[in-house]
Length: 133
View 1 (spheres, rainbow, N blue to C red):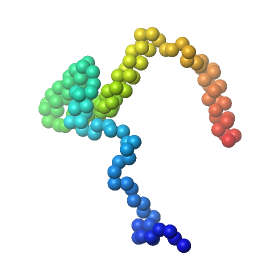
View 2 (view 1 turned 135 degrees about the vertical axis):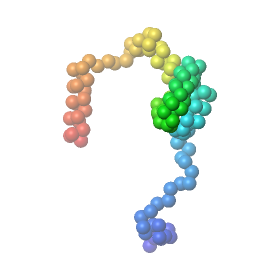
View 3 (view 1 turned 60 degrees about the vertical axis):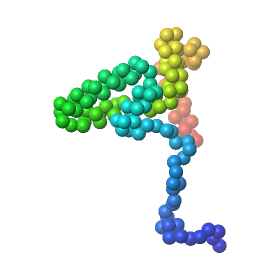
View 4 (view 1 turned 180 degrees about the vertical axis):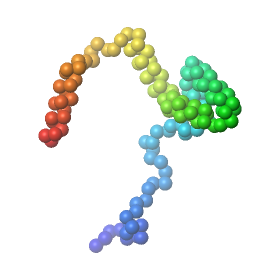
């Protein structure tokens, strides 16, 4: 005995997807020139904005010269990861602060470091464990 109605979609093996995006989905900017431009200008640091502006000016000039959109598409493709990174400025600033700390002071001393031979042995032990289990 079935506890749910048998619909044509069920018989065909189809499932219904939720109409809304999951709440855990990241709020990344769209991969468009407008969204990349807006995100970089509103969220990034001044030096990143200046670098983006120079790249944008160069891409516009190349697009006019070639009478093509490809330079602008290349700009969006290249700068979209930066826009995603800067879409959450608080986290981006934390990452940048950690990077600057490591550049200025070196890696933390308490971190376990492996030499090449130790790393190869560790990988081999992991492979053996996976092949047995």
